[in-house]
Length: 280
Image (cartoon, rainbow, N blue to C red; front, side, top):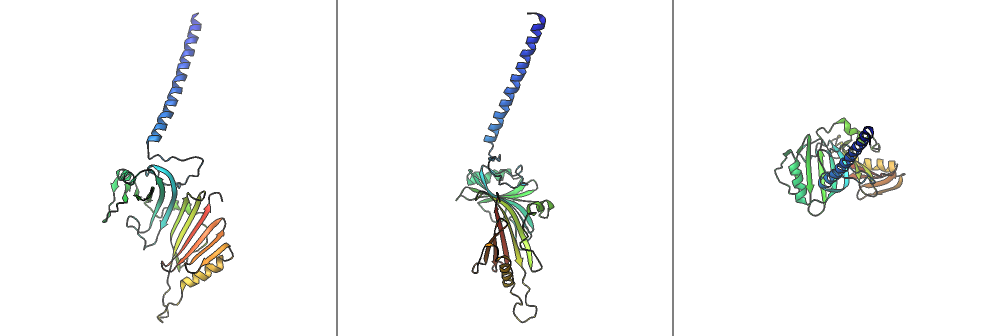
């Protein structure tokens, strides 16, 4: 074997050794990553064949979903009702709400978030089913009840008036318009893991009582009767329309949405809920 042939042979052997090294390294990294994912209970794992029921924008990197089997629902709420107080004793707030099925026990679940909190938030009266704390810019509550395998996570945003929240409501059908006698106080958008997957919009409006302006000892206007008549006229021609006089519940279908309107004198509110399948 001459010198030139020897050099060529050595070069080929070197190339094969380098090639084999990179194959081994690649397989090793894949195995290590698989083990890391399997051993890390906070990793959000999804079946790519199934819809993703976690809303875009949820800070999963800061607030993992502990030992999650599946997401039952995830929603974003914006509430400006001065009579409504958040989990953190605040008015005017926005938050993500996630319901998940977890294979963690109640103790495991709550202890995980306790350790995750950068600082705990305590109430005057302790709730054994819930823990609260701060993670970065977010106020977070985690709850678990021993009677089931559901975990409940609320992530409160630092600014309820953040304009980026508008993107969740861009497609909200304009069915009820607020006015001086009807004030919008909460809206939500969510994804529901049921009936093959659904989107859901909700709103509630506070009905303003105009009172007794002529001072005869009686209300001048029955606002709820006015609204009831208005909505009957507005929706009675819709597909599958119905109205339950006792409960004040009106239902119909329109634009692919199953629509429910509740006229609640007891609460002083009008509730609206719209649901549509993800395939519609």
